[in-house]
Length: 239
Image (cartoon, rainbow, N blue to C red; front, side, top):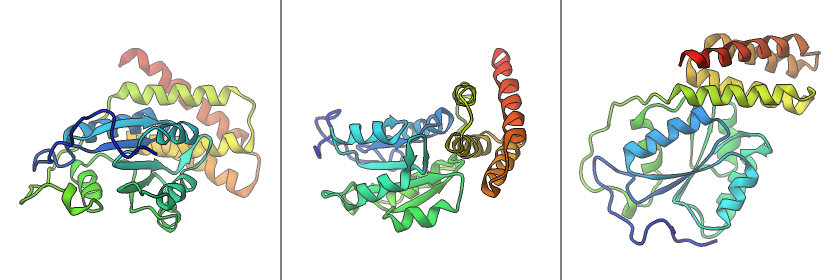
């Protein structure tokens, strides 16, 4: 794995206003809405961002070069982010900072056990929380010097990214339902709905997750979600 960043010939020095200047953050996240939030957080902090939407894409990216920070969503379409966290934290040289993220706080213990340096609960919209989560795990020579005022900014992702997520789940629901796809729909929508403050959709995702946990038929819950997704896709004309 190449330790250098091919996108910059020199590493700039971080400043109080842009404390992550010089860092490259790889975000492994299948939600466009969540990734848009990460993009804005990195932009405000001075960091460059790269994105992978699944484990396969992330591993392909990591074969090319070594980012400074990796943020891994625990629920990905082709597997658990916990597996990738274990790989990253056991590989030498180790990535400076490996953070896990999820809308399900139950995943924090699994991520930490796998070696994650920290956990970001969705929604991730506080600039101060984001910056401190990264900075507190960086080597001293990669941190800005002197006192730094914590920003109180809350970022608001573009709602069109939310619509992209709705279209993605609509495509998933078009395929014949199976246990894995229903679990993925419940996990994905739970995080996206929470981030978008869509209480109705969040409740529907929770209902699907609970029904899947009991092993009972979840077709009624699936049908409710399909209807809600179509309603939100229709709203795209008004955005």
